[in-house]
Image (tube, rainbow, N blue to C red; front, top):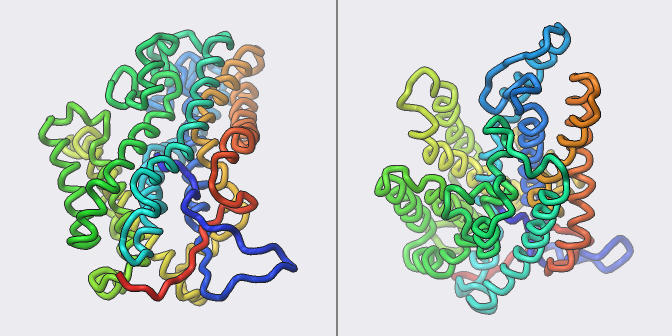
Length: 438
């Protein structure tokens, strides 16, 4: 996942009544909005899965099988309605994580792309120190909270015999998964990758991808340019998929290509290299965004018709297509921001610059970290009340969403905000346009 931070940001402009910043400053707020929307979508995806997935409760939307255990016609109609809402709108949570990874590469590459030397600010060691300070404290606190809830809340440490999504989190209170999570290597082990808190599978993956930036991606970028960098990253990541014949796909090796894609996007948007600014920047990135989604839609809608398009065969292809669409959208939004053209027919900034969405992005990392245990506590609580089926599930879904947002914001204030290196009255990404050339 994107770690959903703004650690590369500059301080926010003064409040009303204070001296204003020069006009050369540029506010890129859509990045935070995209983070917020992605985190919210992942939370809704898991809320539907956890609330309705246990087969004995009447519907298993995770496996897309409708199996009503109640002859009540209203219950049956409710099950079908929830199934179609999930199946049409909320079953793509994995691809929101893809967007996180892409945005992470973008945020980290921005100051490099805008610099004269094309180097990490204050060196490689300082880069890792800042990344660790930004990512690790909230992660470890969320890990401890998840373990405590599993140990103390009745129902969280109980297996549903494979009938529930939460079963993947168990066993949790054993040395193996705990030590793997502490060491940030649980994504290397199929039995640990979803343990304790299933949403945390992407945290070690992203942290490991940080090492590729100074030691692989940037050297290639400085010598050969952005296009070669992203092409080589995708090629290497796909080679691992085929070399191991899919046996390590649980580790998502092709995410290296995703991480490189928005490093590519940052370079295209802000680098002064001729190959990026003159050849790649003018391309129709809005159209490329749409064209990237078309093969994804074809693969996703025909996988049940053509076995060759099954999820196992096309997972890496669809992830890379979403990554390309995300990177293209970011470049398109960057171009709109730079030229401030409000007359553009298709302008996603009208949505992505909304203050509420930008604010959602401020605590999106916290929301991603702790929403799963909160959803599970809600599930256990509402199912223990023995209320009518429809009331239990509707109230449980609504309350789990509300409490996840509220508690995530509180978690952000206490455990994430102190470790952010920006003025947190705003998590905007504010940059100054430079006339320097690389």
